Length: 411
Image 1 (tube, rainbow, N blue to C red):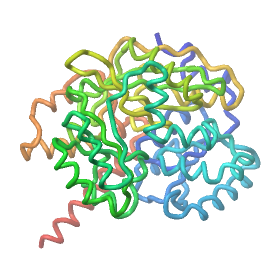
Image 2: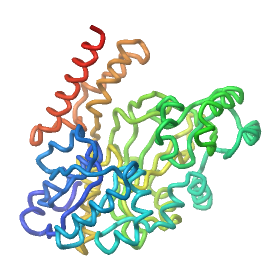
Image 3: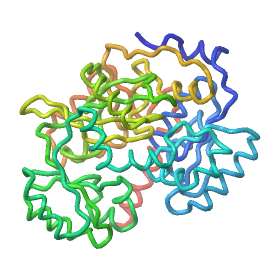
Image 4: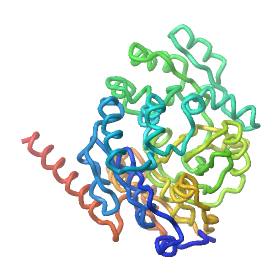
C-alpha cells in the first residue's frame, strides 16, 4: 500500500501548506526535498553558494544564491535572518550536508527563534555525528557493530593489531575529511579499505598532519548488495512515524563509496534494530541508517547513521513513503497520512554517478554486467524527470561545457 492520501488530494486542500521550507543546498537531496514538497503545494526556497547546482533550475525551487555554511558561516547566518524577516514567519529550515548541521548547531540559539528546526538540539545531535558514540548506543540497543579502535596520534594505531584485517579507515566525524586539503590527501574518498597494519600506517601518515583523529573498523565481508538502508522520520517523541527500507545495488568506489544504484525493497528485519537505536539516541528528524549483512554468518552490522536527508531519500516517495511530507506535517502540527512501503521494488539511479560508472566499465575497473540495472523496470532517476526537465538539461549543459573545456586544454 502507499500513502493514504495522494499528492493531488493533499494539494487540493487537506494539507495546510502556508509554511515555506528553506533548503540548504540544491543537489540530489535538496532537489528531492523540493519535488516531494513542491508537488504538494509547499513553497520551497533553495539556498546555495553553488551556481552550477542542478536543483537551482527546478520548477519546484525558488533558487537564491547564498553564502556557504562551511566557508562563510557568518554571512550565511545574516542571509538567513534577513530571509526570515522577509517571509514574516518561521519557515522550516532543512540541512542536506553534515556541514549544514554543524552550522545549525553553532547558531542554534539565534536560528530557533526565526525558523522551525525539526531535528535534534545541539547536544544530542553532536553525539549522533560522532561515530564512536553511535557505536556505543548501538551496542546498548542490542545492535551488532564491527570491532573498532580510535586513534588520535600515530602510536595509537598499534592497538589496531587487535583487529582482524582487512579494515576500514574512516573519520570519526564525516566532515573531517571534507575540509580543504584533507579531501585530496585521503584520495577524495569517504572511507578507505586497508588490508594490513602497514598499509594503515602508511595511509594515516598521508593525512594525519591535517587531522589525526580516525576510526579503524573491521571489514564486514560481502559486496554492495549486502548493504541495507533504513530511512525514516522520527517525531519529537522519538518515535518512527514513517520509514522505508532499501539495499544498494551499485556504489563507487565499489567496496566503500557513494550509492550509484539503490533499490527500495521491503527488508523487515531492519525495522526493530533501527527503532531501538533511534529510541536510544532520542532521535528526532530525518535519518538514514546503513547496515551490512556479513556473508559469513548472515548477521546485520551497523555501518553508520546520517542524521539528515540523504541523496536517495526521494526513493521512499516512489514506493509510497514521503519522508519530507511526514516531517512537514509534524513540524507544522498537522496529522501525517499513514504511509506504508509498496512491495514493488524500485531502483534509484544517480544520473551523473552512473555516467562515471560507465566510464569505469570502459576502463575495465568494474564488470560490464553491473550496467544491466539500467535495463530493469521501475527505475527512479535522481535528476531526470519529465515534469521537471530543467535540472537534467542543466546537468547536460554543464557536462558539455566541461568536456569542451578539457578538449581545449588538450589542444
